[in-house]
Length: 209
Image (cartoon, rainbow, N blue to C red):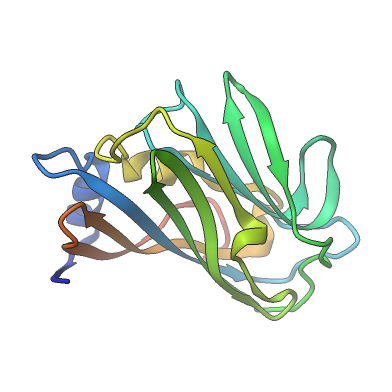
């Protein structure tokens, strides 16, 4: 397998590259986003902060997409703490899965890292949260934070990083977050070649510096 590494600097160039899709002659079959959340002072009593991450295979919100909720559950009803993955269709939650209920974030200056992955498998679309790590929850991710959807997508070339960047964020108590950063973007073609974009972008300009 060949891997091509791209390091973007300055930030304006990174943002320009991330705004486009991965459209091209070869089919993209896997996409990974690596994320880092740096907390300030979380509050267990109010289950804050709360973060909602969105990832779409089609480059828009008109078709199906996935949401990864951190430190709260929002479907079928709201609940504090823990992690949840959601599959959205026609503007509503069609499916929501959670691992065993986890505690709320509660460590000062905690760093939470994880990878969000979209991949194709035998005609189905799979969304996974992988390689998660935090003080409050320990290691997380895998099949308890994954969803398989019978596919109407045969390639991932229409994926746009800008959708993840613009639609994800701190949905509650942004003052308790220092940064929420897309650290790395990785994609794989059907011939096995991988490309990687290292371009740290803090997606929330209104949270604590």
